[in-house]
Each structure stands twice: as structure tokens, then as C-alpha cells.
Image (cartoon, rainbow, N blue to C red; front, top):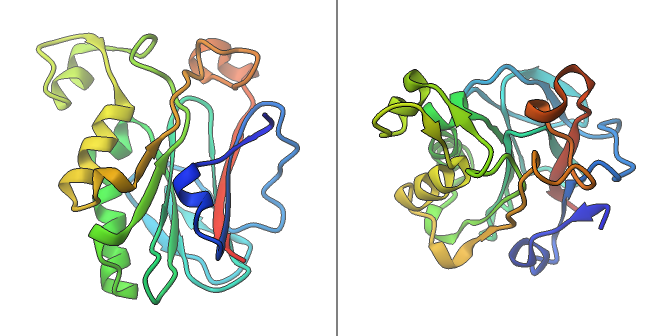
Length: 205
């Protein structure tokens, strides 16, 4: 498939979403976007335009589509089915995961829109798997590893979502390793400067 979807998000008839692959004919033209900086900084998007320097976009205006780009980092999409119908698109590499970006976004959604974490529907898209993500001692220790080794960023973000109050039954983990599956995904670890970017998006219709 060119664009992957989450069954749990797809069940919400008031939004559109998708996780891009290397075959997806997507650009961020007509979407809200960011200059991504590997941080836990978030912005509220009110228009489909470049919004700022950060790694998460929140939105609730109909027609505004929050988008992020990835090529090994994890795309995470959130939707609040409550009255606000707020959404968020998150770019989570190890820096953002270490800074607990998903928790910070959920806290901001609560502060700005009244979102309740227990009602949020979340989906973690494809990223570099634990099979391929070798990290050094400094990064490994940030995630409770005894030293260098293979880091499971999907599991770390899943754990953080649950710790932040999201019901595990409301979370989809799509799986797929961006480095392993060259036919379907771009990967910075595999292709370095030659790597393209995949676009993931979410917004109210």
C-alpha cells in the first residue's frame, strides 16, 4: 500500500489520516508543517502552512492537516474523539522520545483543548525497529539500557503513551522496520543523504 492507515483512527469518521511510504505521492503542500529539529517543541496549527521550528503539531480547526516527515524516526498520530476533536502529529526520534514528547503533547492538548488522555486514540507508525537501531552507551543509558545495544523506540513511545494515561486498547502500533524494508520505506540509517522522507498526516475533515 502507498499510504498506511490505523484501524482505530480510521474508525473515527470525522478525521483523515495516513502514514506515508516511499511510494506515496505525498507532499506537504496544503498541509501544516514544521522545520523539524529533534525536540519536544510543539505548535498549534491554525492554517495549512509552515508553522515553526519543532517536532509536533496540534490542530482542531476543520480543514487543517497536521503533518510531519520521517525516515527512521517514529510518526505518532493522536486524535481526541471528545468535543474538541483535536488532533496531533508527532515526530519522535530518540531525542524527542527521551524528552517525552508524547506526554508533553498530551499535556498541551489537555491545557488547550480539554483533551482527556484516557479517551485519546493513538497510532504509532513505522520507524526503525529494534532489529536495526544500534545506539551507543550514552543514548542507551537514557533508556535504561546498561550500555550500547539495540533500542526499541516504538516500545518506548508506547510505554510513554500508556504512562501518560492513554488506554492501551486505544493504541495501534503499525509495525514495520524502515531500515529492513527498503522496498516500502525510506531510511536515513540505510541510505544517509540519499534517503527521502515519508509524510504522515492527520486532520479534521
